Amino acid sequence: MKTKIPKAALVAALVAGICPVTVFAAEVRHDFWPGRDKVIPHVSGDEQFSNTYRYWKDEMSLDAAVTAGLMSHEMNYKDFRWREKSLEGEMLLGEGQELFNTANEQGQSCASCHGADGKELEGTYARMPKYNERLKRVVVGPTQIRICAEERLGRKDWGEDTRPNTLLAFYLASLSDGEIIDVDVNAPGPVKDSYERGRDLFFKRVGHFHFACASCHTPPSSGNYLRGQRPTTFFGDAAQYPIYHFPYQLAGDNLSYIFTMQHQIRSCQQLSRMYQGREGSAPMTDIETFLRASANGYPISVPVSEYNMNTDYLERSQQVSSQ
Amino acid sequence: MSTTIKVRAMVSADIATVKAIINHPMTVERLDKATGKVVPAHFIEEVVFSHNGEELLVASCGQAISKNPYFSFKFSGARSGDTLGVIWRDNQGKQDRDEFQIR
Image 1 (tube, rainbow over the protein chains, first blue to last red):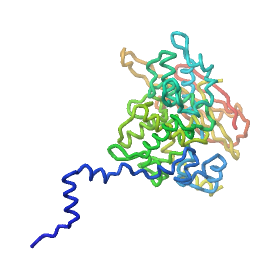
Image 2: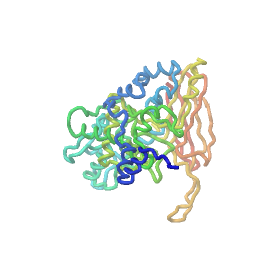
Image 3: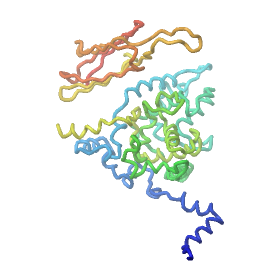
Image 4: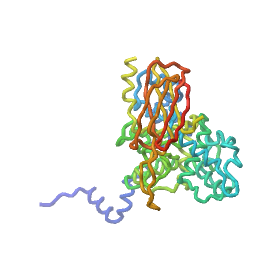
């Protein structure tokens, strides 16, 4: 008896035999970027994603939402972190401040240029990343600290992922506490280009798991539990970085559990089996530009804790109903 | 002002919530890796919290408590503006004290 082979299958097999790479690439779809076209460089862009912005846009809205009995996951987990300052974080700010005022052998310190305790740097972290005219590139906070330390203080070992740099970034960000984030990505220029590259990287699928950042940080993944963690949409979260992230740290870290935005991106890359970028490198800077611009219009809140495992909010509905 | 103690005390409906953190290494006795010499233990033995000068809570601590220990408790009968005193003393005789306003 003659076996019937479907014509389509035969053609597919033939094509696969001749050019298997083409067929594979067509199925993987690297150009599948859902949500990328909905992104705007403002925190209210969350309305197009989780649509919870109205609950956490300011403290009053948050109070109203909590009183109404709204649960944390219904607010995209944006209700904790930025509101309550961390005592442990405040302890570490002292270390950053000390580093800021510590002079090198020539008697120079950060304070020599920027004023004692960084008086003149108040509010600057809200406008990072920034285009550096002299270096002809966009730099994030830690990169600016590294360059300053290298060129002015002769400290070659204050790279982006080192302890002094992280503590300083934490301290400098705290000087901008309450300041509204304002990264201008609307005017044509290098920062806008950086923003757009960062956006594309954020929605691009890569790595062993073939995840994009957006795989976890857009609905339906965000607002749900993901192996015990609670990913949120990418709007507004950058306002809390650098963040105190006890007890989580990457292997070999000695950063007192502080995560700068760069370090956080690397941590995410590690967890989702991507190629880990070097902190402060061009693509990593682009991603940070994208994330910080997505927090435009949101007040910085440093120091706060990433109480990722804290489930106190589950008891909140009982407290509200008993009052 | 003490640089080793940080306290946040807030009162709502007669009940005050106190959160305190003390900057302290809290180490156990161990050998220095490089020289092999004994590094003596250094840890807080006692923390005393007081409310308007009246002893409120005495915590006996030992070596099992972690670095930069954190204390949190609630007590009733507090009013906004009361003072909360904190004193700690460690096994090497060092001590520190500070007073904070309850908000």
